[in-house]
Amino acid sequence: MLHNDLEMLGSYINDYWSLKKMVASGCEPTMVSKLMTTLQEHCLGMSLAGAGGGGYLYALKARPGPLADSVDLGDLTSDCVEVDQEGLELWVAGEAVTRATEDEDVLNHETLMALLETKNKRFL
Image 1 (spheres, rainbow, N blue to C red):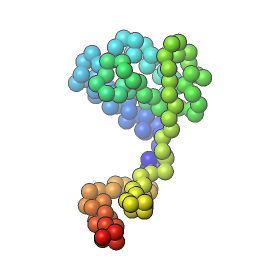
Image 2 (cartoon, rainbow, N blue to C red):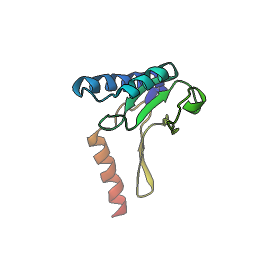
Image 3 (cartoon, one colour):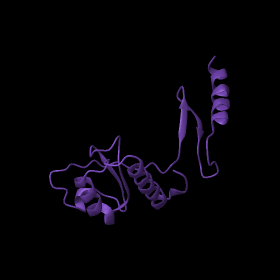
């Protein structure tokens, strides 16, 4: 992730969820709405994965640590994952092809294909 801006990432997640609710009414069950309200002060952003309907809620926490340490989840379970803040690394045949850094905003298709072509020539 470029610029290590977790607050912006959280706002993008929230924006995505707001847009999804506009085009897919009913994708947020009442139980999920209540849960999101409870979690709001602990999270930078939240959304449901997949088609909605309450299957899997993901949330970007404001502070490290398990969510269950901050909120009583009742009989719900939570998984803890981390956001990679190092950027994109692309490996081909065990060798690093490129790495996105703050200096590179986007690894576009043309650049990727040129890098792969250069690396592939060495393996032929």
